[in-house]
View 1 (cartoon, rainbow, N blue to C red):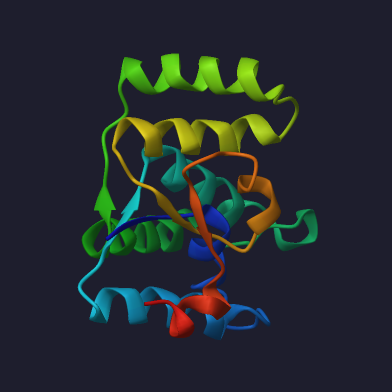
View 2: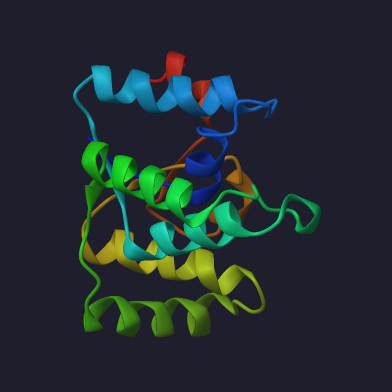
Length: 149
């Protein structure tokens, strides 16, 4: 099965001091051991870079550009980077209109649009409630990966 890995899981998987570090890293490793395909979009890498290089006092990780580059390269080598396309934009427009999406949730809608275009039906995320509104999307919290079959 293919899964999109949400940016919040990617970020916590590199934050050793995060209370969610073990869940995030464990879920990714477990799914990879099961030979399931874990995917990201360019948007995930962009969001990761933004938070990773933001100062810690501004809710970021405070990493250097060199460290961020290393992590993004590592993620790209382990996960499948899927292409953006005009179809994703069209699907995003449909989703935001259909579901009345506004504010910060437009970014999640874009991920779902990409999932729909690439026929991915599962997302690994800590923000379970943000994705429940979308029919056909299985929302998987990292803590539940061990019970997932």
